[in-house]
Image (cartoon, rainbow, N blue to C red):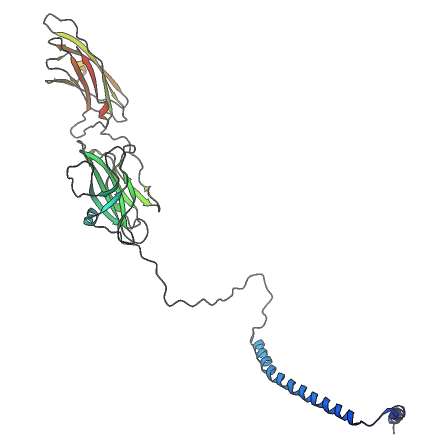
Length: 392
């Protein structure tokens, strides 16, 4: 034997001597305890087997998922990495918005309807509110006539609207305006708004209307409308553009005002009373009337006619009649033509008169711009074109 083996034998012998007296054979109780312990072990082993049968597939699936995940990439650089988002499925049918009503209104449809008209220029005798438009003038003041129609999308809703040029007839003149009409969801004609109107405070007379592809309403505006002997050939004209703001129409293009019309000098006249002198040898009486003519406008008056209204028999006699380019008596007036009269200028005449007797009454001094046949002049303010004076 080796030394190691000898050591092992001696140690084992010492162990038996020390612990052998305490060991006893197992009795019936110990046997029963051992059987119960073995049964519990069998139950635990069976339960553990069931748990393992469930857990092993789950663990295996998780392991497969971990193996399929992408491996960690490079270190984060501070720049966000875009993520891929799957868009939601597109619905098979999308509801479309309700189309705007068709606002194209024919001439006959507009004439057959009662429409709501915006206000006209103040003081012209034309009424706003519910109105029936006429095709021709029936002879009644305040009638509204349909002058012209234009069509286009003026409010940007994708549908056509109707723009009408209207005129209110008062004597030989009147007022005019351009109005936009549309239809509501029930196909009724409704007023969208007033585009522009004639107005004394800002001279302008609408003559025609057009609609561009962008929805701008272009209106041909004259500084003076036709009527009372005035021809449109003498008017200044401008094209102005108007757009819908969502609440009203406002000018977006073109001039906003007119300069002085070269055919419209504003003249005024004043005259003094006249007293006849003593009877002279031939039985007549002489007298003098003083007349002052002013040009209140910024337009020169090339030729002006001054007329003195008197009782028949009174003739021109001395004084400033010689300054006239022509003096022509008539049955009830004496006339004197002169010119030119510059803007802001004034001319005073002392005109001698002779009467066959002491005639008394009221005379009228009247001034009228004449111009020429090819370049006529008309005064816009006739109220100051005459003055009354007494003689006797």
